[in-house]
Each structure stands twice: as C-alpha cells, then as structure tokens.
Image 1 (cartoon, helix red, strand yellow):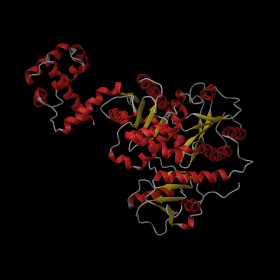
Image 2 (image 1 turned 180 degrees about the vertical axis):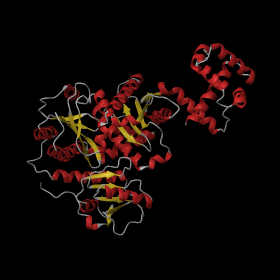
Image 3 (image 1 turned 90 degrees about the vertical axis):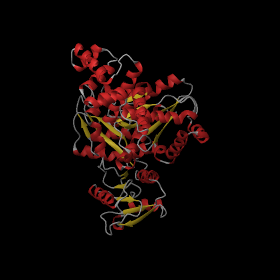
Image 4 (image 1 turned 120 degrees about the horizontal axis):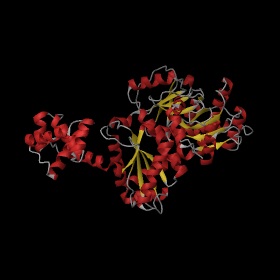
Length: 535
C-alpha cells in the first residue's frame, strides 16, 4: 500500500467549501470511505463505510429515518441539502451540500475521487497491467477458473486457466456474454437477487444454470455506489471462510478496473451525453446538432421506453427508491449499448429510461425489426428487467420526427403498464395499436365529460346494471366478432340460450345487431368502460 485510504474529511476537502461543508460530527470525519451510495430504502443493504447521499430527503421525519438507516448500516457519513435541522451531536458526520449542484454530479465526483484513492492504494508491483491479469491473480489465489462480467452479464475478462470449465463457461467466453437462457435460470433461482442484495460470495449448486452447469461461486463487484459486475468461479464446493475473505477483498481491485474502463459512464462524458440526448429528444436545430455530436444523425432513429410493469404514479419521480432503480437501469442500458450498438444512447426521465437508437444505412422496416430484436436481447440478459416493460417506437425517418417517436414510445409503454391490458415484456406499435387507441379514446371522452354509456347501451345498463346478464352476453358476443357459437362457449351456455338473450337485448334497449355503426359504438363504449374500471 502506498497511500492512506479516502476519508470523509479528505473527500469533503477535495470537493471544496463552495460545494460541501462538514457541519457536524467532525470527530468521525477521519473514517475511511469504501463506497458512495445514493439512499435507496427499497434495497437497504449498504457496504460498511459508505458515504450516503440523501437524494429525496426533504423533511425532518425523512431525515431522521435516513440517519437511522445510515447508522444501522455503519455508514461513514451522510450528505443532505436544504435547511433541515441537524442533531447537535449526531452518531456520524453530516455533510451539507450546495443546492446548486445536482445529486448525480456530486455522486460522480465523489466516485471519481474514491477511484483515485483506490488506485493509489495498490503498489505498482501488486497491480496487474489489465483486467485479464487481475483474473489470473484471482484464479491463482482461489485455485479456480475465473470470469469477470459487467452488470449486464457480458464478459469483460477471464483467467487463462479454464481447466475444469464446463459448457456454460465455454459458451460464455466464445460469445463474450452469458447465454440468455442461463441468465434466466439463475434469475429464477434467486441468484442475482442474492448478489444484488448482499456483499458475501454466493454458492450456486450444480445444475442451477442448466443440467450441464458445474457448481459456481459468484460475488458482486461494487464501486462508487454502483453495481459494476460480478466475479464468477467454477468450484466443486462452497468456499472456506478464508477463501471467501480473499475473494471479497479482490472486489476492490476489480471495481477499480471496471470503473476505469467505464469512466465515461460515471463522469463528465456521461453527463454530457445525457445533456445531448435530452436536446436531441426536444428536437429543433439544437436537437439536430446534438445528434451529430452523438453520432446518431444518420438513418432512422427508434426510441425504447423502459418503465415498471405497473405505472407508479406522479409521486414516484421523487421517490428515492425509484430514482435509484432508474439510475441503475440507465447504467445497464448504457453499458449494453456501448457493447452491442454504439449508435445509441441511454437517458433517464422522471419515471422512464429511454434508449435512442440510430440505424445508419437501414430502411425503416429493418430499423424497426433490429430495434425490437435488440430490446428482447437486452431484456433477456438483464435480470432487473423482470420487473419492467420495454416499449419500442416506430422509426423516426428524420430527426425532426424524433419527439413524435418518443411520445409514441411513451403511449405504448402506458398501454403496456395498464392493469387491464395484457402485454409481452417487449412490445411495439403493431402489438399495442388497439389498446393504445382505446386508452386515447377513453382519455378524450373523459376530458370532455362524456357519459360512460349513451344510446342503447345506456338503456341496457340502466335496466339491469353495468354487470348484468344481458351486458355480459353482449360483451361476449362482440368479443367473439358476432359469432354466436364462440360467444356461447365463452359463457358456457347453449347457443339457443345466447340467441334468446340477444333477442332480449333488442327488446330492452333497441340495439340493432345488424347495424355496423351501432355495434361499433357499443363495443367501444364497453371496452372503454372496462379499461376505466380495471385501472
């Protein structure tokens, strides 16, 4: 070791008095800092020694819960903004940050400072020249074949010795990524949940990733408050306590290399790319110039919109857990695009992560198909996306149409998130055209204050209620495209019973089943009502 570790005091001093001030708890200011984390109450585990940033903490009650969380998880310090009342003798140092600096800028700067300290702590003799050499060192220490993956399960390095490697390891090295079916199997077994939520090595028994998969040990690599990737070992049994300690210690060095390799994702370049992407989505001359600087000006451009399975409401945009999850998802998508589609950029919105994908020298149909395939591959490789949906916009022929493509992606995603609409994890306009237009029609009718039912359907609903037998029969008949036998089978009644009920519908409300316009209006009113009541 050639330098002292980073401390709360040294990091605050490097930020400068205009950005950060240590206001209380100076006695503990010489504690070592091991990570920079953004407060996330949904995933509460912290590495001891974390510098915890209180994004989303705005009230005294919220601050008390935040401080208690930090103390229980042995954080090195906490940072807040605003005029919150601070305890006169807190259990750990509290840093007050300038309100003019964004949380992401603070997090990026602190992480870069921490990375510099980590690098200096490894003497030249002990530092490997690249991540492959680091994998060799770990392999020799653990006496096991090693691979190092990024957070999206793409391989970035592996040890030269792969002696007892199985078919899964060989597939992964040849394709530079863990096969999607293997990733899904591990996700279903809860392996990635255990890695994301803990700091200790996780033993994966034989067959967990497929019948031909050997036992493994994995550990998450974190740096600067982010999940950066994983170290995987092929083993025959769980690690001893000493081996587990050695593997855990090796994550700091791997984190330094992974953060260095992805410095543009956590530093100034990433922030500039995000600003350019925001200008690109906004459109106009500035958007065109931004697209040229990003290298996305040629060919059709498609938009991916990624959001949670169910919409979380307007208040979710300020929820610390939502902010943290979207940040992780933006990082994952950014890493993935950098590896497989450089003509793309990831950007985070209030409740959505967007991907802007340019397809130089491609036609609109080819761009649409390629974007959908890319989205499905990303979903298959990213365990976190089990809780999210991905909407794929139609291609924007020119950059001036990109804002429309983003609106279309948002509309498709909204339809996918609706509890009354079934959808696949990845969908485009062809998949969601009907529910999207029904939602728009429902919104428009509601904005005008139109009644839910008019004409014959209003009469029928008044006669027996919106969920009566005749209303149920009419719904089934319309859903079956006026095929009496199909509707009768759906309702589990005889077809003659169905025909009797249809005659009763005509008698009660006067609906003409042979009038196409009348039937269309009835069907639209019933479908819109179903969407309202399922939301």
